[in-house]
Length: 101
Image (spheres, rainbow, N blue to C red):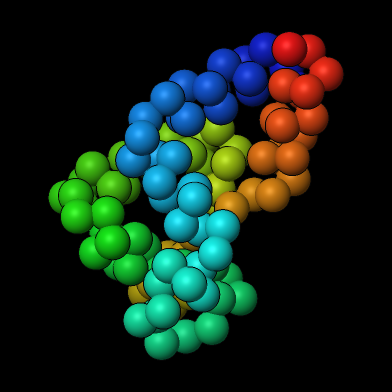
């Protein structure tokens, strides 16, 4: 993990709304039961907007920050965009913290 990667992740995690989104995406079946499709590709961005209670532009900005940091991935299916956690990145970050701090 590079210093830039580390800085990007820490910056992304500095916002409580972004931490909430990551926590919700950890258990999508529990946090987003109203999603009609399965969770193969993650959670539809519309479901995240509704749960966050923030404007679409604000949530989009949070998701973009999380994606730039590598903490989430997105997949477009037709007109919908789905987000899910990038468990490899989260695990690498946690391992880095354990080893260095």
